[in-house]
Image (cartoon, rainbow, N blue to C red; front, side):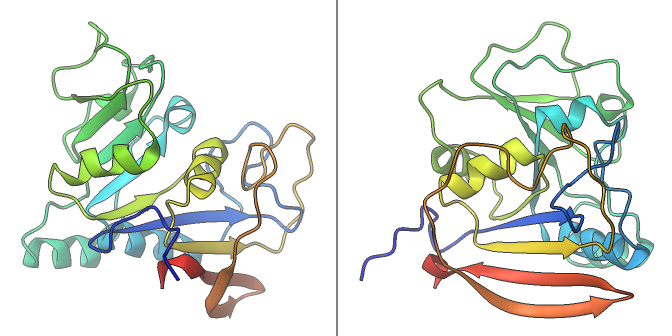
Length: 226
């Protein structure tokens, strides 16, 4: 049977998300999940260390002042030994290209930031930011190929919920790393794991399950990635 997965076999895309018992990924007023354990945060740093490139949505960037880094010296040192940069470059996917250029996110030297957008480069974009021009008709598999052509093949998608939805909807995720935290967050406006219309059912296979202080850590493989 032919595979329906949209990714070539020489790259892997992982999605890392955390949610509460009621399916929320952030608390009121927060864009970063601060309700998980130190163990979960170290898992995130390990996934970042594995990655050649991090992919985030523009909405997530607008709510954060600092870029996603590997805040573990041992993991950074291992990347150096492997001939990699201390932190993987960040690719921000944005339809409008309208981003808060005065944020610390764009004025740091620890990691390289790229904006991937069909819009023309904003004249206010800092010189340190690379602009990757796409087209309005380009889908995510094509965008991933464009980024892969820059020398990357291990991708970690960190959200937010609308970007995660798009990647799942277009069959662009190989593995999902999901943390279920032992908390209820509530809030009608708080986003859930995926934000978007109903999806066609597809099979995800549980590869790993681990419990740490009542926090459940799951790894699922998209069945069509076999």
